Image 1 (tube, rainbow, N blue to C red):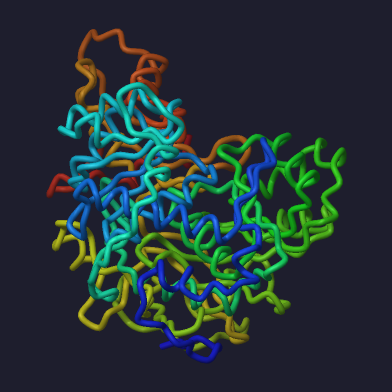
Image 2: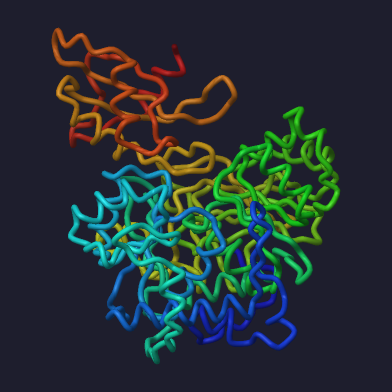
Length: 528
């Protein structure tokens, strides 16, 4: 077993609201918490806390309590922080929804999470309204932050000035957030993260991800994703830094915002690192304010990170985690010379095992090259999820009796203490840092009247990015084309989930138990 090299940290028995906001002093209250780069509007910590309390009071006045699930379909705007923490302050549960989701996908998550409220913004209202109506959420429980006829809006709710409710719950067992993850395989499942999980991961990350009070942190990674939720929103607020919000990624806007707002700390996914390393537009901007760049959500190769770091004059770091870990379990410390191709060391209060996926044997011995044999990473710590919502079977497959989460990722441990991710057991496809579950796309493809059978795997495109490829068995004389298949999928899923290659085959290879033999499809792809 491997242990964190960091001393253990105290995990307060607090709600995430109390952990982030109760200790604000007079100096903190006047500090800038949020910056809208488009308008230049700034929100201080004092104002943010007042807004959080008022939103919690408005929700509670309308009957929201610790049993209520509120969904958020919202891009990165300053109001996200108000609403997110207002819901938690009311003791309710939040399920965050990908802003790119279609009506069908929104409805699926609302129904599974049993949400009775939905918060969105006017550009996303058409799909939000249809999904809400499909699951029975009334218009007066569909909040449109920037206003829309027939719906509550943020300004009017805050103007009520209501006192937040007195709520009681156990931070260790009460679910705070329900992000959706496919885990190691299958369709998305609600990941139950408690207040203690969220508090723990912020307390753990404070040791290794060194955000300072005077940092301006660029928040382009979505808050609805657990990475943005914990490492950006919650960690930056706990450190009393300023968050500069961006609702979507556009390279020119990204570079302009860094230059104009003098951002100092960037949190990114690997595709942004590639742009920083290679895109000619980078040379046209003054990025000298940036001192640190932290990459997560998918593996980043060391050469790209080092090239980007040299180009903009900043230090690159990398970490590892997953929604089920709140999400961080490993990170390169800020004062370390560990190779950026690694994911660093275990964060405080975490233990890990490397387990041979074939034999179940624990791998600890280092070879002449300083590395262990590759094994599946198992993690235990206070940041490990409570389980999957209404999925005891999936929970039992992922969490063992000793409290270890089986990540499905394959890694090695270096004698100097750091880990490197080398492969993954899971069937998930990662496209630009977003998870894509093959089973979800397969289920959709099978709904097409001209598709008899289908399977989806991840393949590499010409740029080396993993993309979804569909193998399709078409109905006889269907006249189905690859373009037809791709258009059908595109109409029903978020853009990052689109099938980008199609191959027609006579039969999908399957085991005697009916499981798709993806290894056979990968072998076919490799031989092509």
